[in-house]
Image (tube, rainbow, N blue to C red; front, side, top):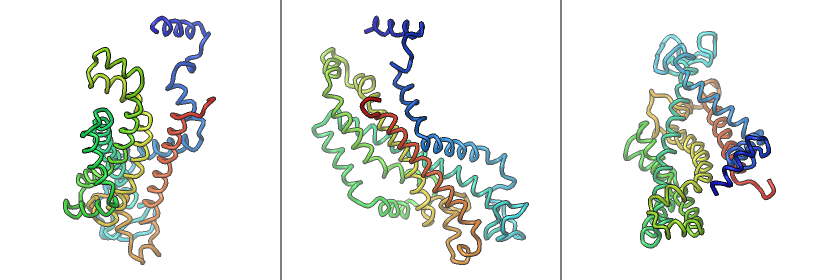
Amino acid sequence: MKKLWKRLRQMHGRGELPQEHYSVSRLTWKRFVRDKWAVAGTIVVISVIIIVLLAPVLCKYTPETIDNSMIRQAPNAEHILGTDDYGRDVFSRLIYGGRVSMAVAVSATVLQLFFGIVLGSLAGYFGKWVDSLIMRIADVFMCFPFYIIAVCLAAILGPGLRNTIVILGLLGWPSLCRMVRAEILSIKENDYIMAAKSLGLGSGEIMFRHILPNVMSPVIVSATLSIAGAIMSEASLSYLNLGVKIPQPSWGNMLSAAQSMNTLMNEWWRWVPPGLCIILVILSINYIGEGLQKAMTPKVGE
């Protein structure tokens, strides 16, 4: 095998064999960039990340700055997206709120990945009573509607940034756990895993070197889609005043603060921008996830 790999590299160096023929990552990237919607979604998400990271540079005001002389002002030269009930600059709150919403989504997804991969790996690899125990725990989490449990936990733990991340992370792992378990159940029966066991390799080495790398493709796709779901869940909890606490801004609690009929009819600048941001980012992330799924699971003949 080493001689064959060395020969392939020599052929590539002489231009006889393009790298795409043996580079899975290069082929995946080429398939991904062919998807125009996925590329557009990537550009949008990267642009949003850059904008929210540059919030201190782009915003003239902090999101908590109150100006009683500028309450409920329409968009103008001083406040390009107007002001809210307390005279706070809506543009500043939109940018800083995007930072909070994205941070909550990414942090919650990391928690979901940790629990999902660890528990799914244990269940799929060891099986027997370990599998039964973990799957019954996952069933308990999945048998109740997500938002009912999330609202109950938020009411018990109280609203806040940290609690929102914990709630979304703890409730989002069962589906990922089931997927990882199913992948490992199919992979561990392959001949190369049997050979590794017969050579005396330990369970940890087999898991980390031979099984988990082959599970990463569906995990990456699932993680991408989980970020979009976490943004929506954070917005929903914050809209109910059970997520990120005011005065700290997020796209969800900006919508919550603008839910009166008078605001909806006469002060569009308070609810249209955060609503559009949520829709745009979630659609973009979903397009990225769909593009990754197509790129990592190509059709026969590609």
